[in-house]
Amino acid sequence: MPLYEYKCKDCSNIISEVQSIHDEPLKVCPDCNGELKKLISLSSPDVNYKNGQEYYEKVIKPDAKRIVNEIKNGNENLAANIFGEGD
Image (tube, rainbow, N blue to C red):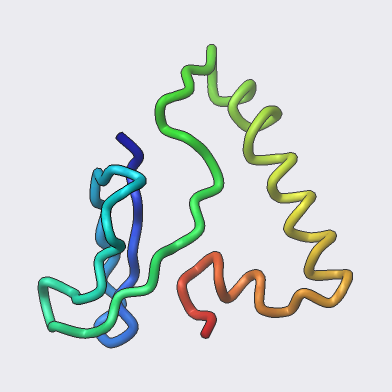
């Protein structure tokens, strides 16, 4: 099952939860009862790579280039959404 991450809008707590894709998203922080926002995941933890360099070349670098290009092209909220700070 996929691993989903959420960030609390009140206390900034990060929560990781293994959930089915059919489960409802978490909405309430277990620490402060604040509102949770689902974070955007950039990679899958189920994929195995030979080493850190291979992981960087195949996962991090392409995603980073895509994100930089989207921000350059006017998607200013993308970085905020990635870090759970967007609306």
